[in-house]
Image 1 (cartoon, rainbow, N blue to C red):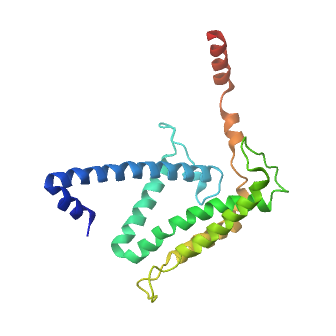
Image 2 (spheres, rainbow, N blue to C red; image 1 turned 90 degrees about the vertical axis):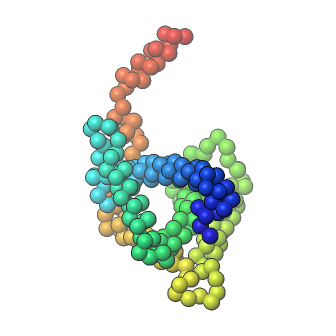
Length: 219
């Protein structure tokens, strides 16, 4: 039963309308938050030349001083993903089902890289660490995410047919192949990691000097 019908049955016309209004309001703010995070991620990767058309996506608008191109790219891409559901529910479900394992895999990719390259990369530990318990906890986390990701790619019911097959694995493989192909074809020659030092150097030092001067004067 659709959610709107449940609200109508539970609260009547007035109560159901009020509850549905709050659902729409929550969806709106959730969408704004997700779009903000996606835009920041798109701009960050484009700024470091890790995406196709990086120069276009990383361009800062001279009036608003914001990455407008990245914003519109996220809006367009999100709209296309949602329009897919109109033509094929199975395709849209496959795309959205990949989000949970993809999020988990993004976590363990960093953990796994840290365990593999810990002797080659100078790692600066934070104020709180697990000490000697760190490595076993890391490997347990990796094993768990691999296990749960495999489970999440399973079809929901048996027997497996073309209609109930979980096609999220196909979407995940496409994303992985596209990312690896782009890395080997172009990104590996340009991407050097986050360029935070360059950004900090572009900030005028007078702003910091004036702030320090004001603080010292106030004291």
